[in-house]
Image (cartoon, rainbow, N blue to C red; front, side, top):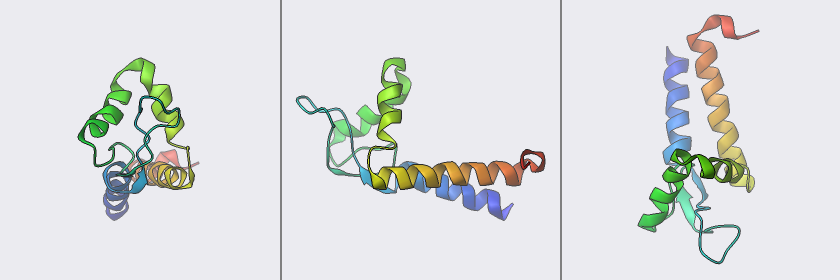
Length: 100
């Protein structure tokens, strides 16, 4: 149970508190916003960017753009891999037959 709890905490930290680049779509720039953001799902200090990144997951056309931003730079790659690793470790701890 401890591993599941810690895995969930790391996953929540990755989604909402990890220091990454915003990457929200900005008019006139192909690489998006370059401000610092908190978490994979949240945007930077600009209020509109916070909702743009969450809307990217809801609208089917924008999911590819969101997923490509997960591996856009070193910080985002590290946080994405930490989130995937914590999800997998929680899954293995919760369902023992998953570990092969």
